[in-house]
Image 1 (cartoon, rainbow, N blue to C red):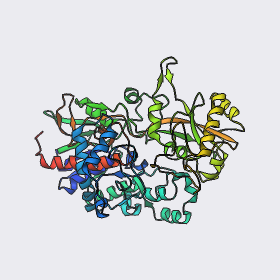
Image 2: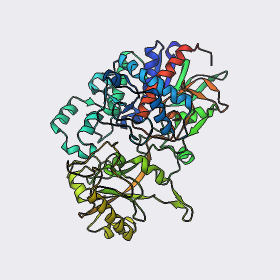
Image 3: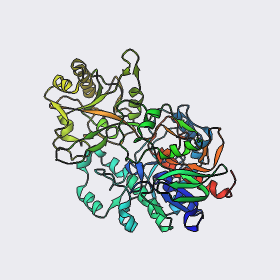
Image 4: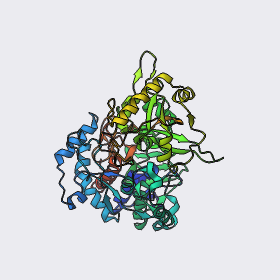
Length: 544
């Protein structure tokens, strides 16, 4: 072993979990190295809104607000749906509030996100209104110097604004109503918010501390010495030795067909994450006996679609419909029978319905499904980030009547006509009697018109009518390496594997369980990145 290849901490993966672990280790006085298989840093963190959910955070306290631990625990327990590990959940609750100030000391400034309430506000015990959700402030990519283009910036995503601004301006479905002059200046200055901004902040902090970063360097396997993980071998044959520990933060497995069949066999599921998400961490961990835990009722699932523009050679636009189109008026989602099956504006309500299986047909009841909208939606709201009022691409099915559209989509025409008729009555009355769409306060997009009785409802009645098939896509993989409250990976015999840690979505979400709350994944990565580094600092080089 040479000095050039030996570090206290070797971190595999550059999403929120990996960046956090590498930064915390260095900030605590340990040497660390960050290793990324792809050419650009950030993973799926760069696709996110960058929301960070932390109960009793320091920004709340500075504003004179109180947030009782008991209420936070009650809410987390509700979210978990019986699938949490108590010790990990309590570690998250207790250490998240001190993690944020720790990162602020490393130069990352946070701000509250006004108006964003807990997903189950008014429904679940311990849920509350605004305050628990924060985000990193804007940062210019120019601050990274030669590393500026090494952060992954998703095409077509408006990351030059904060999540708070986007929500205040009406949501992504109102993109054209935003201040275009401001946006142009932001792009010129390469200002970054949301997940891209958070990653940029963390990379800047790593560079300032001279933490080595390797890109295009996939890891192949873990190195063992007498049962302890002592490093990782890269695909090119290089060995990186770790005196204190290896942190697996390699993300999910949506692009690994075998693992998807093993853990998330949902018909028609399409990955919307970057292609590098192939489950490398799960495979390396399993090879040395690590336990893998699957969240059985993972609600972190979205419906999305891929839109093919009219321009020859243009790349398809990937869109998460659950936080844009499905939240907007003049849209519904129907199954093959032409029937709605959930509150479209609240994707957690949609997810369980996607998994319902008809034992007589031996097929899912609500897959495939389609987004149906009319010309009023097309004229007033954005489709897949296109400017409001843009021509709907020719790849989108359309018709002058609902029966004609049903025929093109393969949907039952009588069912669709009846469904739209009932929905339009609900929209005019302002009350969705079937699924209560628009009644919950949580949302990331809003409707226009102050006089609207229900911001989530608008009739689907003005031709032409349009239809797009929706595909389920994982927001976070259902399975991951089983870890404890220190982020240590556990063996199949439920003992910690010495020297091995996991953070981010490479670890099983046992602190969060079944439920989904915007900002929990980011907060978990930040918190357990810190806890892993602190545990390695306490332990000597050989103790378990």
